[in-house]
Image (cartoon, rainbow, N blue to C red; front, side, top):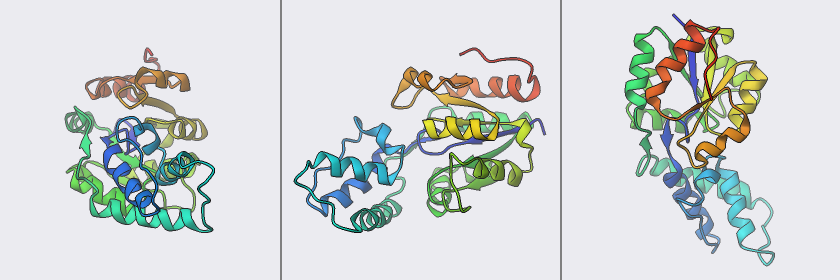
Length: 231
């Protein structure tokens, strides 16, 4: 095998923002609060359930006092709503499936390392029809720690049968950038997410503008590792 390519899930493999925000809005509406906007707030969605709830609370203003335990209760409701409608509007980003097929054909191992709960991540990957492409999948609750701790990344690579020194991460947020730095590997951040080219601010080793470009990037980094990708 040439190497291991590790993917984040939300905002990297698939645009999950609309379904995530719909679930958060259901939890916020139960408290009489306004919801988030699926388009304008997509970047918040990719930072997780608590981030969406806290944004909803903050927008309610000082008059809204968060009851003790409200966030935990609302998160449970959000996850229940999300589980019931996990792929209603979610779609893979263009070119994901051909890229995965080409990477496998080139001899690379593939894995997912996400901060989505493991059960939900497994369900979504199967709903999207790509679970079998990955030799390993690590979720937020698979281990005692989650990204940006490097342990989930390393575990994903090892479970896939690879070596951390011969791997890299593809993600879409500062969490992924920090994870790669902690694990001592390269990171490519996608430029087709909510931030677009502005994700360059995180100083990734490369910007991935299209999944069409991924097999060549993997060739450079894992088969010809002396070559540096242009960003």
